[in-house]
Length: 513
Image (cartoon, rainbow, N blue to C red; front, side, top):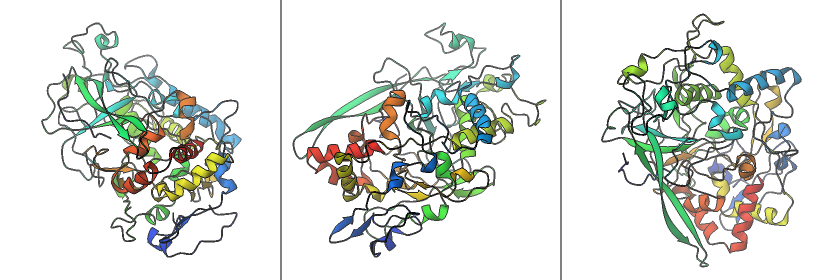
């Protein structure tokens, strides 16, 4: 079946945390201390003031930043991880790599896969800890990415209104033997087996973009090609959003940013009239049973690392856990609901889920302690020039350069670190071309969370992926910038109006982060 929906438009100022953007405008340039990140200021007439390069910028992830020698990786532990915590880190890493199997089996510690799922392991999509990839043609099914589904509207607990038969994401894998063996190209599974929900392919559309200086680049965007729906037609008002798995390094540091520092950057009604608002998403916390600020995920729809990891286990791998104890089957998928589970009813914690709390916690803490790679070429003339252009073009208006992490008794090595994620973790209107028209809690169909830029330039070296933005449409930093719209239109226009050599310098700076 071919999806006939229209193209998925699927896809500083004194920037020290604790100050509002409005306050920044009227602030004098602060004198910088060795204990605080460098900041940029803005003068309405003179333009942004470019902060002096700080030594701390060389270590984006604070003192725990990892070296890229002998090899670059997003799976290294923070270098200041206490020796006493290393065994648990590598145990969590092993669980994140572990391929889950269908239940029941003698291997009770790793059974319970699916019955519906997108990947057998966590890191099958977050390849080497980095972003997933998307097929470049229409011949290979989607594997490291998936389609989110919902109906128009929002729900205070779920965030979205799931599609009634298929739920809130399309799962293209199942434990059905006939599917596993690909014994039939015509049927997804026998009638007595749980069928995959569908196979998803991408039709790429292209157009050319011409810079004012005449240079041209090709842009592309995906249309979903949904084939072999396993449970009947989708609801006629189904909304779609293609999502590529993002990198996972540095998330423990992001979790320790004080909410007050993020709130201080929000300017929902653009009171300072700089064209940039920025909103905090309001999402459901399954542990606190109340609505709280969100900061993780492409639409900031998760509040904590625990919910990020537990949600991925439940929805992407089909592994129930204490935070998300349900199997990934809707009420309409009766055969799916009848499948054996790997619930650990007689396990150590007797919680009746496939992944007990102690093992879930190992994976959560593994993610929290993943290091951010050190910067490269920070002193190169082009990178320094690009850094200035980054501020002057207004990129730092959303890509907030730095924060200082808060205190953590459990993770003191992550506490009080000057970090350089280049994200304000806020929702921004990115324009109609990147809109997926799919609300998620308070995020509307045009809003996306500013993605961190740290380590971005190592992506190809680490796992071969160069695709950016939520649906992988951008094949380079340059394409990603040109796709910016909405609140980022001013920064985008400043970029495209630069001479070609200055555009290259700005891109080289981003790739050095």
